[in-house]
Image 1 (tube, protein in one colour):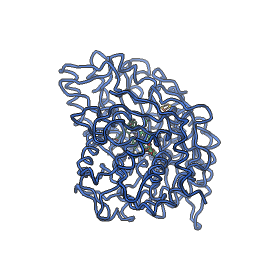
Image 2 (image 1 turned 30 degrees about the vertical axis):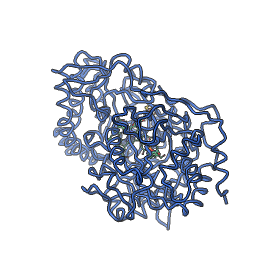
Image 3 (image 1 turned 90 degrees about the horizontal axis):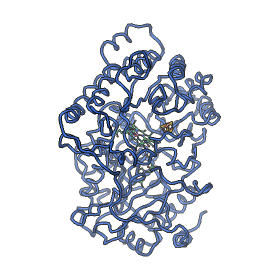
Length: 604
Ligand code: B12
Ligand code: SF4
């Protein structure tokens, strides 16, 4: 099921609301001196194609955004720990400035939720008197917040609260809690007092449990879908988040200082950056349009240029990856951004000469932008990831076709922009088809000829928050286990065949490997090296080397699953995951929260 839509006209915060709450918190922050640790959950078993380099060389924007919001609000004692870099980190041993944190936040995607719950379990080992308030957030909390609460009295491992939204929701929760906090009361204690007083139920975008403080959840309260910030210029400065990162280490504890600014470029050479959010298409396997309440949200072109310049100056960051769903979604807005990036100069130095940027777009919109591709290249764009899915549009039709995809790829390539296709393999698609373009290898060959530089092929996998999600389970497609190995959350990454009614699902698993081997191989590498040089051929050759190393890793991780699918007994799930206890929606017309906000100092 998609996230429900808020009432029309009420999807977005009022202009200035996020700026206002940031200012109000800044006024009260000095009186509270909070210490916060924000952890990013990461399951290292997910390290394989097609994300093999980006997954650990791009400090995620989500935790950086939350960290930046804390610092911007005056809570400077904040540290961000990435499990990508600190896999032995133990929350039970964390201290910042010699103090156990007041707040422990953990961010997770669905596939990393096993690690997320382990971190929560470990944080709960801190004795109750000093235990931080545990706040879970990120995509898993957005789509499946109930999963962060245990209903098992024998193992009551739960977050105290799940935030199903963005910065504003966290700020709203903090505002309520700090207004009720007496003296040095622990944040956890004030949270439970606020809960019992009914002070939380009017903050859209959170879920918490009813029940004893450390016991299993007896029922869940869902305060509804968040209001989104529409003007992304209201977000705190992204420069702030990098300063909070914990340096990579094999220790369970935290270092006395965060990573040196001079090291950031080496550790996280690609900077993910929020430019726009939202997409006008409506693919049934994608949660993005509903998450964004069918809105297109963006930063102003000037702010984007300033942020890139600041990140470049402060940390030497040169390569940016837009966290866009479809950067070309709106032609005029896109042109405004690229024209500004083209013109921008800081201290007499043109920005476009210092930066290279990359992001995600669609084939349809690339063709709409065809005549502007030289300008887009000149503004620093060097690669675009395109959701091709199935070139014949039999899986989903978002305006792509063999001819259109080829045209878009050739146009990008001839303008010095690497086309990076993202494909989706599914039950009805054969590995190879005679005389048609339907087969997976047929399409890869077409993409290669059209100039594809890299390749992503994932198996169609149910994604929470989509129209197809529940039906895939109810239709008996989703596997529970194969050959005695249960399907764990980390296997929902599209690299494992875990949803299929194909008679021989192992074939699908091997098809994914065959596709990568067909694209990334020594013959093709030599071909690229000896062929006539073009603006991007050296990049394509480089990608071949990364891809070949990735194929080995992918085969190592997924081949035993193929064997289980081939020889083992396959068990299937009959229904989608869901909350095991009743979930109640809180009433949104309660005035309590408003009164608490008004008792804080007013905006300057
Ligand atoms: C960039 C990106 C990647 C990069 C990640 C690189 C990196 N290290 O950052 C790469 C290419 C590697 C990648 C890979 C994958 N990705 Co990806 N990716 C994205 C993308 C496009 C942008 C992420 C981003 O930076 N967003 C901007 C930040 C600011 O938003 P955010 O992370 O959501 O954080 C905000 C809120 O969630 C919240 N929040 C986040 N954490 C916390 C914590 C607390 C305590 C609180 C209070 C709030 C909070 O506040 C944040 C600020 O607003 C998103 C889609 C999107 N537009 O968000 C998908 C997305 C995150 N990816 C997704 C998926 C599924 C994957 C893959 C499994 C591939 C696939 N099958 O699609 C792999 C997994 C690889 C791996 N091993 O982890 C899904 C996750 C869905 C889910 N339910 O978990 C998303 C949401 C896309 C989608 N389908 O909707 N991805
Ligand atoms: S085009 Fe991409 S972002 Fe847009 S709805 Fe489809 S899959 Fe999602």
